[in-house]
Length: 47
Image (cartoon, rainbow, N blue to C red; front, side):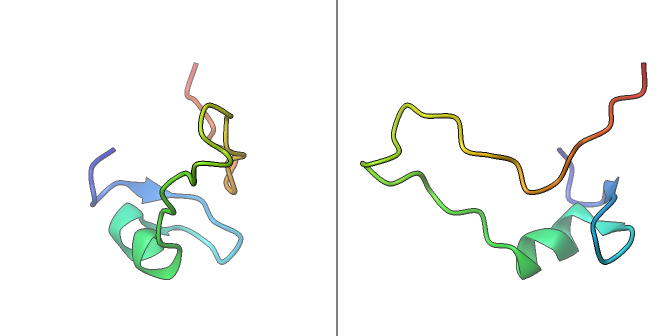
């Protein structure tokens, strides 16, 4: 996803770069390795 993409967040639409600053993506720890981490944001796909 490009940093200038607009995403929907609970705080309203913002760019992906802005959201990443507020919500740093955590690298999976060894304990959760191999598991699907839950997405905080429901991404809507334009079908």
